[in-house]
Image 1: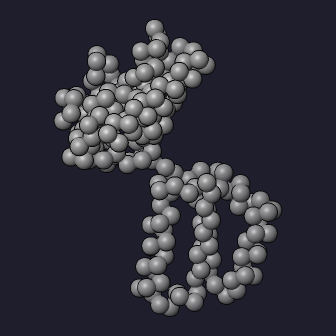
Image 2 (image 1 turned 90 degrees about the vertical axis):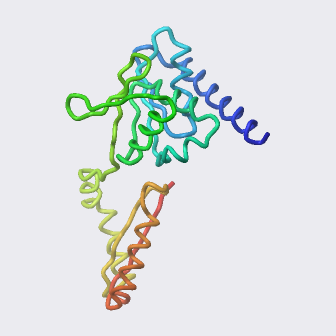
Image 3 (image 1 turned 30 degrees about the horizontal axis):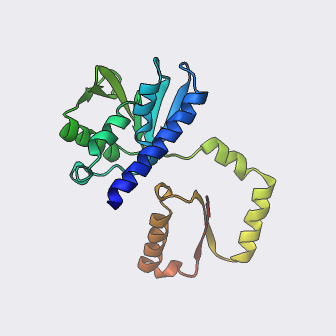
Length: 209
């Protein structure tokens, strides 16, 4: 009963978002939907338009293995929703691979390599592109901040606060994909395995929502 209520609420949220998008997006626009909260939106938009805008769906979270995904009662509808987009994207190849296997095993969808090395999915007479976009560092923006006067002042503050120590600075978005937890574990491992650094190195970490 709780699961059914949760699913109905999930559908209503997706319907509401799709209706809002329909009210503002034209057929020549690009609609980019993000994350597991809105898997059904692409399919809903396809039904609402006589000629739908270009639809992109991007999953920022890891996609589960097909063995785990098939335990979901609504697995087919979730996949059909995502496959209604023109482009389906993930951050990592393993996440995309899990998605492809789920599509193959749940819906019998075929996929293959296309010209240029991309992966295409054949679905409802459409060629859907699978995109893998790794999270990287904007080097140019980072360099510009490094040259900023305020950055230099803050660096001096850290040097004075942690005299005679090597300062490692971290500034990340507060989300799982930023890898902050892994960074802290790596720093802990550094100090455990190299006791000489315990009083020589300090990690200053800042996270932003």
